[in-house]
Length: 365
Image (tube, rainbow, N blue to C red):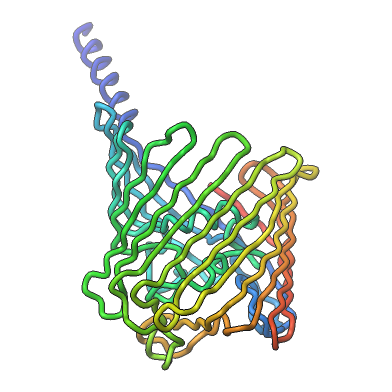
């Protein structure tokens, strides 16, 4: 009897050890609210376009359901994976419908001393600079969002946020300094070049500074406006993006500055410039958010949703400056649940002003 109890105790100890060395976490968020726009024609990314109808919609940086895991391999080595699905809570549909693991899907090996190498689909290094300097977290009607890429778009036609077919490397954290290098392989595609990207970030206490660079190599020689609805916009050989962001948290307010420049268009002769100033500030039980940005486009940019697209969306027109003001307030009911009220208004040369407001709830788990 004593031997049986001893054996059971030993087995339990080993089971606990194995459990501690390997873990899988389910995580996600659901963001839903109501929104209304004025029907203006100016570009106002994240808002309602020219619709004046009331809408029930995902109001944040994307409702999602994800799974991530970690296994301790010993000797400072570990393995990780992540798969993340994006969806629209108001309909239950995948968002977008064509990419089930839209949020990301990768496998990674990590050394505590040497850093991490990952393979799959994940955020481009330049994206992190934009995300961390967007007071609205790259979501909602007031977001900076993809406008922060200054017209730099990949062959997928959905903006330079993630890289598919990616191989990447992330350094360890060296006293607040990190770097991320990645390449998205074209895999022989006739409409997409190799996508090389890099960032360097410094985060220490209240300070954040980041710089990123991205370039398309061996892309199509010409990449002016989309010429037909059946052809997706893509950057040509040598198209590039450079971005920079900085913020400092004074506790009572966190001011933000961000600038970006892209080179693209026919023979990469067009330079598009973007900048914004923003802030977040704790007020009462919540947080105030504000941003003002301006895009100065030298070239036109239009995108189709894919090679079988039936429509083309014009994101910017050469010479037509775009400005946007976003204001919002998050009221935290708990660490995981908030109610928010956002407002945005956008102006663009030769178009009518576009305004929108949204009231919603976000729950994270």
